[in-house]
Amino acid sequence: MTKPMGAVPAEFGADGSMLLIGGTRADELVRRAGETPLFVYDLGMVDARIDRFRAAFAEVELHYAIKANSYAPLLKHIGSRVDGLDVASAGEMELALASGTPAERISFAGPGKRDSELAAAIAAGVTINCESEGEAERALTIGRQARVRPKLAVRVNPDFEIKGSGMRMGGGAKPFGVDAERVPNLVRRIIDAGADWRGFHIFAGSQALDADSLIEAQRATLELAAALAEDIGAVPPLVNLGGGFGIPYFHGEQPLDVERVGEALGQALKGRHHLLAKSEFAIELGRWLVGEAGVYLTRIVDRKVSHGKTFLVTDGGMHHQLAASGNFGQVIRRNYPAAIASRMSEAPCEEVSIVGCLCTPLDRLADDILAPHADVGDVVAVFLAGAYGLSASPQAFLGHQPAGEITVGGAD
Image (cartoon, rainbow, N blue to C red; front, side):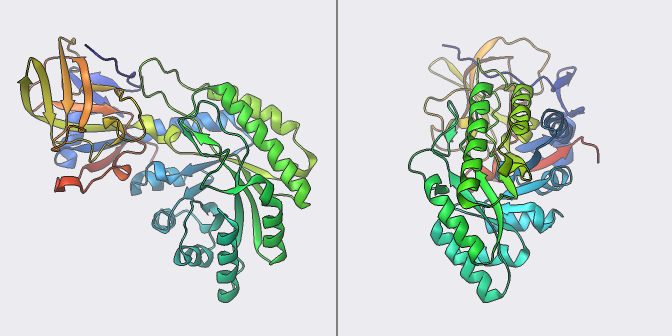
């Protein structure tokens, strides 16, 4: 039975039968890169997302969570246009610094930071989002020994989550952050120890498409930040409201109404508690900025029929694009949008499954979709590949060649 796919983003067109990415033909991009598999990132689409955010959230800083995609040319481009970068390891911190972003605009979150990572962040002047009392004590000790005043924020585990979010990061027992009721004592300890307290990081969930759920979570976050500030008796310099903005991967999903979220947050900020009057606010986004801007291109190397079912076998697969294979958080596998990039003008005429080159039945890029007739040599495009793609996939699995990456478009 034919299975549906998500919608291809409207920004992608065609030149005759060939897919256009950022105004450039897919076959020309493959020629430039040398071969497939290949990730292509449209910087123009990223810029449009940044502009859209700025228009909707005039009073809020924009931070980029580089775990979504840390490809160096993309990161440098984004870093020059946003207000901060959020990292989750010493390796990501090095990438952020190498992009030209000043240390004072970088924050470091994530549980399980090693002493060497804390020391590197403190020496560089990067803000550490403390995930526990123990981590904060280690950072204070390292700062004292190095005679450097560490910049410390506290990641708060709130007592709420974003309803309907694809991945819940707050509420209940979590490895992330400090439970809200324990935060005031920890912040007082940080201040009393002479550290530079930088505020709160409050992240309740990700991949939310419902505007009402995000509006409610942001309202609750502001209330929580005010209550914590009142208990502590100090003004948080920055309140990172988290992110959670989702993109529609699958059939039937609708895009998030970002403008409505922005309007509601603007009203909430106007009426915020007086203790937050001088605080700055940030929203931290990853996939919403880059997810739809990426395309994974992979070439068909075999066409085969088994028990009446047609398989298009490609030179790529789940070792590059784990999420599209359904093995990155999906409970029931659903199809990302995909197309035959070299036959965009042709009508679908057959049911096929697109699979990768790995020797495992898990390696599927599209199940039972309707597509134009495709042969060996044709190129397949898997869309929504800009976030949690190559860097989130098991590239070394079975020793196949790595995928290439390239950017196109943008103001630079």
